[in-house]
Image 1 (cartoon, rainbow, N blue to C red):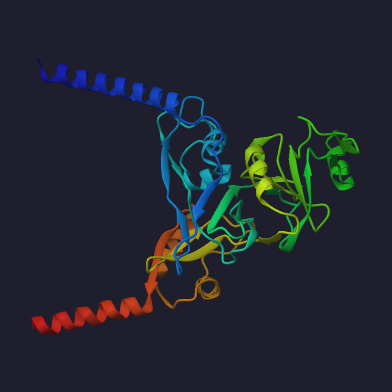
Image 2 (image 1 turned 60 degrees about the vertical axis):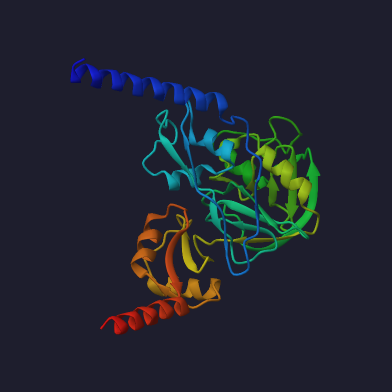
Length: 330
């Protein structure tokens, strides 16, 4: 057999394997929504949970569909896969699933990080954290920051449409009713939890494409299966803290990591002083920082934790050991 014939056979075989592989993924992949991401809390002194995953895009996939399968928000996937078309990823292409997280500084109750488009819940008396992607207030309808709590829980809620929303939609020729009953046309979905700020809710949705985006009038929206799970876990008067932290620093096994997201507000270019303040505010250890790595990661903004430093004591020990070794060899 000639060399050209052998090459042609190999290429046909590779194409056949690729078709079979894509078909296998399509058949075996979990096309139903994923369950909540639940992690055992890290060891004392560490701050990171989860692992980055990879998957192959299926025929007809979108980032909305992939996100629903892995419980990852739309914009989280966009950040981690900047060169992939989110509406038409090439079948068989590799998609990064950014399911590794630096936990926010506060670890109690519900913590909603707007910049990350993600909520963290710390159930009382359980050594775990449960996390979900969320949709938040769109530009001009910002979700309020600060402390709050769950004031009311509602199954099959009636949506009393705020007058501000009715007026805003009327500008586009859409005339909303004063109240929307439970059902498929209710944007609150099947469950809602009212915050102390009476006009703001944590709720489900009748349009899952809004999860993982700035899509609401200030409320926090979750996938239907996620709000059902969270609703069952959370009690009335549970504390809620809403933060805006695009850059998170955290430790794992004597290494300092940075997780960077696209800020909600436009910011100036890399600012070392502001990063130093963040590190001091969010870590208890003194670190030797690789500032070139911090700048590169903060500008890339892909939402994946990456190493940027080591404890000062560790660096001093390594240097001291190297000097002693060098002295002995001479």
